[in-house]
Image (tube, rainbow, N blue to C red):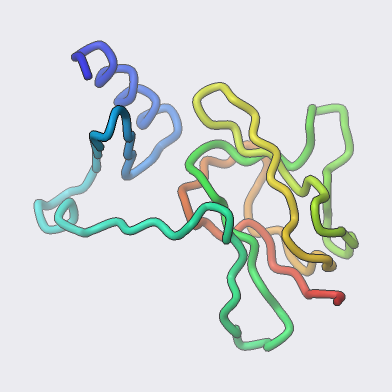
Length: 143
C-alpha cells in the first residue's frame, strides 16, 4: 500500500466520521483508528460474519430483534431522495427484500432482509455514517 492510498483511506475515514477503518488487500490487513489515548487504539476488533447482521440474542422484549450494519458507510433509507423509504415503522418485509442501502467507497450496497418481519423502530437517520455492527432497525419476526 502506498502513501497516496493511505491518504485516500484517511480522508474517507474523516469524511465518514469513523473511529476505525480496516482494509485487507493481498493477504495483508491495514487498520487505522482514531482515539484520544493509546489504550483506546489497543482494542481488538473481531468482526462477525457480514452475512449474519441481525441480532439473534434475546433483548428486553423477547420478540424484538435488531438488524445491524454489515459494513462501514453511509445509511440510506431509499434509493433516491424523491423515492419512498424501503421500510418504515410498521412496514412488513419478506426475506430477500431490500431494507436499506449502505454506501461504502462510492458503491451502493443493498442490504437485504434475512427474515420475514415487521419494522418496530428505525434507529439511524438517512445519510448517517454507520460502522460495522451499528444497529439500524428493531423488528419483530413474523414467521
